[in-house]
Structures are given as structure tokens and as C-alpha cells.
Image (cartoon, rainbow, N blue to C red):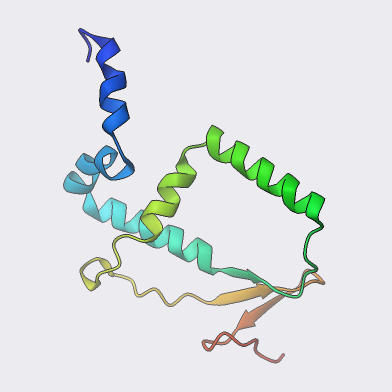
Length: 121
């Protein structure tokens, strides 16, 4: 690659998220497992309920903005990929039993019970 940089395009065309992270996963699998758990934890923390559906214009604008952000910042693809990996008990040093919350329309946070229902306060 250093002698013939133009060959990089051939390698990149065949590269995927899995092959691109191969050496990291082989040499530091615990680091990858930690990242996967962290991304699952972040995704599970806040559920949004009771909010009105966005207007068609607002939904279109959000989709447009989300697509632009994903093109500019490639880490989103890695986050989505890793969220589904390293789920075996071998990697679960910490059980994935985090508290969950719902964000209500009045901007308050309510803890969710384990069954997915809100707790009464």
C-alpha cells in the first residue's frame, strides 16, 4: 500500500465492518465486548412514550439530517454492528440488567419496571 497507494481502492472495495475490525477483535476482544455492551446499554436507557407523532415535514427533515450525519460520521455503522455482537456468556462479565426509564411528554423521567411497565410514584 505504501509503495502503490492506488491499490488501496481495491482493498477498500472488499472491506466490510467485520473484516475491518478483524485484528482489533483478534488482539483485543475484551475491548470490543466492552464497546458492544456500552452501545446496548445506551440504546436501552430511555424509551420515549406519549409524545405526539412528528409531522410529515418534521419526519422528512429528521430523516434527511440523520442520513447526512451518518455519511459524515461513519461510527454509526460500527455502533449498530457492535450492538448485536458479543452477547455470549463468555463476554458477559457484567450482566446486562440496567435500569430503564421512559421520557414522558412533560419531559419527566419515570423508571420502568422490569416488565416494561412504568412504576407508580
